[in-house]
Image (cartoon, rainbow, N blue to C red; front, side, top):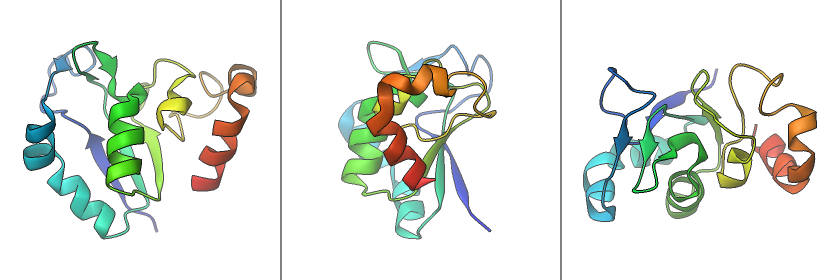
Length: 130
């Protein structure tokens, strides 16, 4: 049995959740939004599911945000599990370089072997996490 915590991060609404953008400053992120995720990481949750929304001034999809996944979650929080997308929340195979380890649903799309050939080092790391 594995626990998955979701939705990382800044996903505070269901209406237009796949098109809304959240611009959150660093202090607000760490004081308001991240504590529940930090607690889950501290409890050794197996996976974190990234959210549909876009984040930051550049409106990067949350599942493709290196700041969220790579720097904050896997870096500062020292998350050792794997990051999976919500159903259809990944928008590019390049998300694997940002810290996404598993795309849902399945590998027939963005994370197919054809799409991931250019990301072999990241694929190995993602596979080890999963």
